Image (tube, rainbow, N blue to C red; front, side):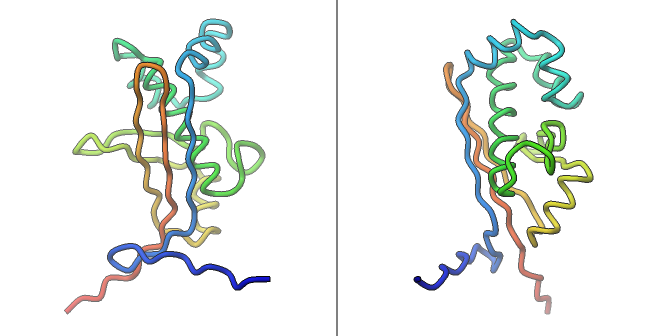
Length: 146
């Protein structure tokens, strides 16, 4: 059996402790929404996400990106969506520069601490047909001041 591969060092000295990615067909999200309506939306997305996505001209692209983000985060934790991390445990919102950020509920916060991570990084992208998300759990190195 080979030796474990050490976690890569990320600038400025942080460690990658989890990585997840997911790609979602936008038509699939649109189809489930058309069949199940608000029941689907309320089961999967937080109010914060719905307020943002449903105010946009083509909401299904943004809903699909958030669906992919939830899956990517669950993969980074190694749990999948289920007993330890629910759909609404992960909420995607935008920072000051419109960058995607993640808000975790208590269960998600507990998983973050248990993983030894201090931060969750997320990137999203979409075309007219697919949405993609990549999530990384990072343990940041303590800052060494002067």
